[in-house]
Length: 472
Image (cartoon, rainbow, N blue to C red; front, side):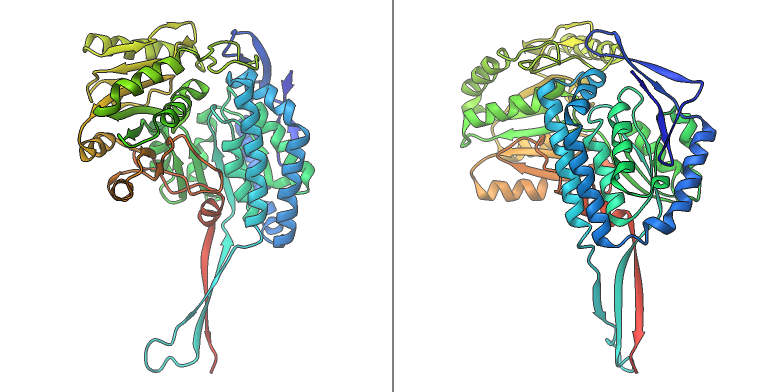
C-alpha cells in the first residue's frame, strides 16, 4: 500500500519514496513517499499562516476537535493496529494497547484544553504601588516541530500533537521513516476533525531535509523523542528555541526483601521484555535483596521461559523482532563483550536474524555496554544487594535518569528513594515501564530535557504573559 505525505492538510507525493520492510519477515509491506525540501517549506509557510486561526479557536472548540480525533481513532483502530504490527514489529496485543492509549491521550487533551489556567497576583508589595494587580495568562507560541521515533508510532506522536492542538498551535510532524503510516493516518484524522488543515503537516523525510528548521524563526518549539546522541545535537542547533527532549535510559529496579515476590516477578517480566525491550523505560538493571535472591530468580526464570517469541501478528506472541539488522548486529557485539568480561547468562543470549531470545544476565560490570548503555532489547541484568543505600547507588550509577522502580513496603525507604534517585520519576511497587498518559514524564541527566504528559507539554507549548494593571 502507498502512503502520500501531508502538507497543510493536503496529500502529496514526490519522486522519492521508501519501501518499508516488515521487521518480522523482511517483506515489503508498504511504500511511503518522502517529503522534499520544497514540500517541507510549503508546510512551514502554511503552518505559520494558519497560526492566526489556531490561536483564535475558543477552548470549547479545541476540546471538541480533540474529542472528535479520539472518536475517529477508535473508528480506525484495527487499521492503525495493522500498520503498527507490520511496520514496527510490535505484537498485536501490544499494538492494540498503544491505539487505546492514543485514544485516551486525545481525550485527556480535550479535557485539559478547557482549563488552561491563569493567575491573578498582587503587585502592591511596595509602598506607593497601591491598587496594582497582575493578570497572568498563557498564550500559544506558534508552530511546533515534532520528531518522533519508531517504537510508539501512534501514541508518542499523540503526546506531541494533542497538547499542541489543545493550546492552539500548528504542527509539523516528522515521523520515523520505518513507521510513518500511523502518523499519516492520524494526520488524515486531524484534517477530518475540523482543525484548520493548513496547521497540520506530516512529512516523513530524511533528517537532513529538516535540519534547517532548527534555526528557522517560524518554528517556535522543537519536541523530539529518540536517541540521546541525536537529541542533544538538536538542542545544540536549536538553542534559541524551546526544546523538549525525551531520550533513552537503562532503567533500574530495586526489589527489597519485604516485597510480594510473585507480583514483582510478574511486573519485571513485563517491564523487561515487552516489545522486545524497545521502550525507553524498559527494565534493564535489577537489584534484588540477597535474602530473596534464590526464590526470585527461580520464579523469574520460570516465567521468562514461558514467553512466546514469534510472529507479531499472532495473538499469543509475547516478543516480536528487533526493529532492524543493525540493532541485531549491535546486540551480538554487546553480548559477546559481556561473555568475555565474565558475565553469566542465566537464560537466553541467542540472536537469529532479528529475533533475540529473552535474556537474563548476572555478574556484570558497570563498564559493560549491556550495563552502562541503552540496550533497547529483551535483555535484563540482575544483581544482588544487601544494603538499600548500595542499591540506590547502583541505580544512580548511570548517565541516564528517566524512571526507576522500587518494590518495598517500607515507607521510609520509599521516601529515601524518592529523594535520592536521580530520575524523572520513581514508581513504587511497580516497574519504571509504568506510564499513564496524563502524568508528567521525562528524564534528567542524559535522558532528556523538559517534561511531557499532556498538561506539562501544554505548558511548554505556551508562553506566560503578564498584564500589569494600575487601578487608580
